[in-house]
Image (cartoon, rainbow, N blue to C red; front, side, top):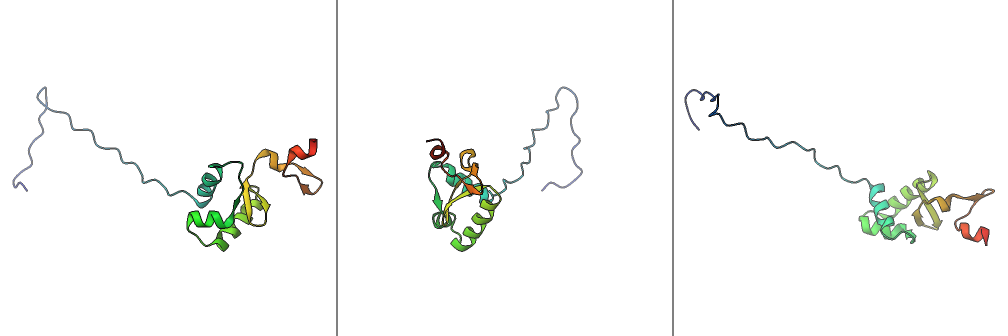
Length: 110
């Protein structure tokens, strides 16, 4: 380190501008579990995924994930297509006939 008084800054034509300071960017937030599951499911859209498969990919306990998937299905974020099987909730999967949800709209008009 230098000792003594700090140097005075030069002014005028011989002064050099300060180098640009790097802009501070906040660290990226980790993706939420729902975002990760949505990314997995949309990687193969027509396919339904079991909670076991999703838990394996995310390296979490299947029981915990199945509980969460069930809650998200009740909220309408995912569609439960079978026991422990989930797919992305698409407009075609939301049609209902009475109290029964129609998973295959094409079967109604055929």
